[in-house]
Amino acid sequence: MTKVVIIGGGPGGYEAALVAAQLGADVTVVERDGIGGSCVLTDCVPSKSLIATSTRTTYVRESQSLGIHIPGTATAPVRVDIDEVNNRIKRLAQAQSEDTRARLHKEGIEVVTGEARLVDPHIVAVGDQRMRADVVLIATGAHPRELPTAEPDGERILTWRHLYDLEELPERLIVVGSGVTGAEFASAYQSLGSDVTLVSSRERVMPTQDADAAEVLEEVFMRRGMTVLSQTRAESVVRTEKGVLVTLSDGRTVEGSHCLMTVGMIPNTENLGLEEAGVRLGQGGFVEVDRVSRTTVPGVYAAGDCTGVNMLASVAAMQGRIAMWHALGEAVSPLKLSTVASTVFTHPELAAVGASEDDVRSGRIDGRSVTLPLNTNPRAKMNEVTDGFVKLICRQHTGIVLGGVIVGPRASELILGVSIAVQQRLTVDDIAHTFSVYPSLSGSVTEAARSLMLASPE
Ligand SMILES: Cc1cc2nc3c(=O)[nH]c(=O)nc-3n(C[C@H](O)[C@H](O)[C@H](O)COP(=O)(O)OP(=O)(O)OC[C@H]3O[C@@H](n4cnc5c(N)ncnc54)[C@H](O)[C@@H]3O)c2cc1C
Image (cartoon, rainbow, N blue to C red; front, side):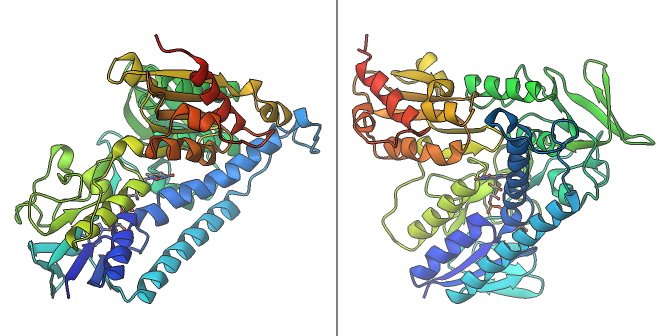
């Protein structure tokens, strides 16, 4: 029986464990904190649970145009009990961690609590315990990057892992970093009632996302009262008597009650014995892997955030499964990043899959695209949805769907149709001939496909 040892119990690790067990391997997962990993306990699940609350508060605040007048909301802000919110989040995260642990147990997977280290490619150590392994999977995740001039203290200068222990809603929150994480928290806390300033080192927020989408979101943020400071960096963050003082690279200073640092992730690959075992680490300490999750050492695989391939739970899980299918001799398709769907859970949401309009503009792909604003969609009008759009990208001559971007409510759910098209290499004609419900936001996806069908390629 093949012995598999997995270091790390996040989605990269536990999804791999389930596949390995299904294929009949003897599987052990070593986890130092809690099953579910940072994904479940501190990062993805808590943030999306917080956003569940902030989304509702936005709907309440913006419901007057639908004829709903909630006494008090016009004059006083919606009151959020942050204690209740945080307790709910922590309860939910803990319950999901326990559910996942129970599932592993049910599948006969051994869970060892402790910090693991690779002694050699076939021996994993946890304290004094030594485990022999035919296959090792490194799925140790990553942790928030900290700046020496802005060291988090967990009270006023924070990483997102401190947020759920706050006893009060930050009155004036400065979010440093306008990538996906920064934008999500800025949007959420603004909806909860904080006065938010977002510090962005680039010209626009979310520089890695579709430019039109980022523009819509920045506009919405500012309309709701957020201050966005662009093209400047936080040089330092210090505590003051009442809060924090952020000094920017252009010399300006900003005062707030709290500062949330979202300036990237560092892989958890130190002191694991990786390099000693011959596992090559690339730039920034990420484990180098190929598309079937192999490291430079035979029998040692890696998955998830520690590889830096695409720091998403869905990608971590897929890398972990692929590793096990490959290691245990199953037929496997290598990881295909061009089909990964992702969402920025702001309000409205920004979901994207596949090729971007930038790929078309720069000539990287021979394609064409169409963008339909949501405010022309009947369902959007009925729901008073004014911000957002559907963008579809297809191959110039064949009309094969290569990608899409949706900005709107529940874009994370709406993108699936486009994802299926990209994965299955469907054409715009295929989508155009698909029934969407009338009235529905997804009607804009079929309409976008219809307009690309009619557009004759040059
Ligand atoms: C705020 C935030 C929100 C996010 N939201 C989303 C989202 O909405 N959707 C999405 O797809 N992704 C989201 N992500 C990304 C997602 O959380 C990560 O991609 C995912 O957690 C990666 O899974 P992983 O298994 O690689 O690592 P992790 O989930 O970090 O798990 C790694 C585990 O390994 C353990 N470990 C580390 N070293 C050792 C050791 N030596 N011995 C034993 N155990 C060890 C750690 O304790 C940890 O539990 C978000 C990230 C952040 C920061």
